[in-house]
Length: 137
Image (cartoon, rainbow, N blue to C red):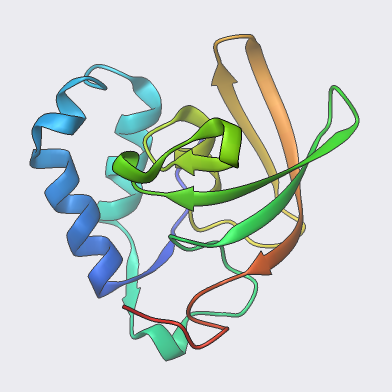
């Protein structure tokens, strides 16, 4: 599957680059989906927070996804690994689905191999995006 060219802020790009060099990332080594994320970061369009399109999933965005297999919706907030908590709906950017949705837009179809098999989700809604909603670090 060809890599998507994601739009990302410099702050998020830098933090993700640091994450790849950290010990946290060691637990995720040799995962094909992380190779995809790494490639996307290398080819990313880096923009100022105010220039992120309103429908793009960024870090700390809250998104509603439709599981195309189960025909159910799920809501997640995309977070860094130290904030991840599945029970609270906080999805790590280093999880298979987390790497897949970063940089996607509302309406996109996302496919990713997950522990239960090949998953497919549609991005139904972007409920919160810090750049759009004027909450930036």
